[in-house]
Image (cartoon, rainbow, N blue to C red; front, top):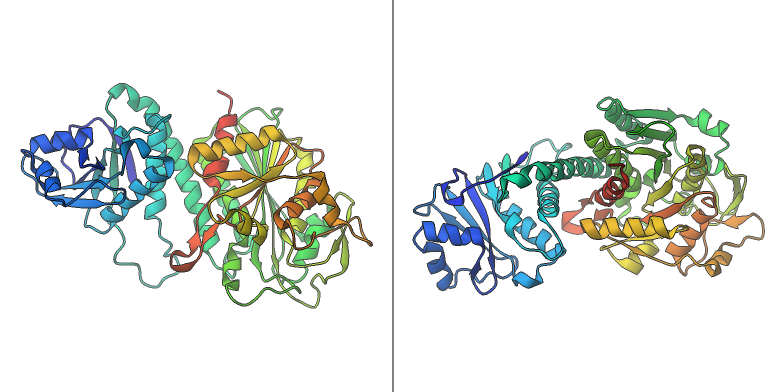
Length: 497
């Protein structure tokens, strides 16, 4: 779908649909006022009849209004103008997308850029509208024998810009939004693919495919023998129960000179998690194909960088394997040695994500990074604590954490900081090894981060637990692509001007 910017006279715009805002109390937005004047007060008369109050989420599609060239006008309720938050704004865009998708509309002109949102300018609105537009229209149909006949016909959306002088900077915002949407869609595709297709080898191939589109991106894939040579005993222990070979995928994007230290992203790539010997309940186990959404979001972020080619160095590290029960799989009570030399007593084989991430964190030291963020669907405890609204962030560097929080607040792809106090570390004590891989039933998201912190002492590090935000269940089951938007914004904020 093509998204562009233009200065337009609404009443003269030749389009399948004009999308304008109406506020509570039947108050017309500036463009809606212009259209109402052009059609001789027809819109105001409809509102007086009570067809639309302007409440958040209400819509009214009008056809063939006199004095207006466009075939349709979509009035979208935005609620109380002064109460329009980021979340409400995104809901307005989603509502409009749903209405457009249900009609035989091939092109539309959107005037939501004129809506006032406290503290946010035009470029922010261009970003949010574009990202939400692509997200709302996404469908996963790659594996269906027949395509959805109700799929939207929308091919072009024009965002109105009042002043021609704002178009240049607006195009930069549009390019960023389109690239982030592309990375998010890739992350959703990878997450939605089943485990028999999206294997560690498949993830490696996708990383290589991205590298072919960008000269600044180099991809190295380490096989089992090379991983063993690095003495990643913790990572390899998880892979032992599967016939799928593990892969360590390293993506290096160089937008600056080689001597400029990179930021490192690490993504958990468990392409299917049955829990190993500590096997999961059968109910909803199919959703464990989503346990590689950390890897998917990191690879998706690299796709965004490949398209934008910003002035920054970034390395993505994806340890990937399956976690299955087998005669050779990890057993509760087994002790393994990590790349760092620290030993781990495995008390629960379903706490496997931390076992692959810890070796990846040690491996990250070789790049002497400015910052390291690991991203993982790590704990159900995080879902209990924060639900499905925010990712959890913990770490050893408040500057990195605050930058993550700022990026989340800017984009709406939010995170919330949880404590990483020393008192929690004792829950990982083991009588037989340097540490256990679980800390008991309490504070599970925190003790998982405590475990990882033991491998990040030389790093400026933050951990994102995305278990609650990486996918939706129920009727709208599917990967969300989070936190590609957050990670992309974090990196764009670090770019050299």
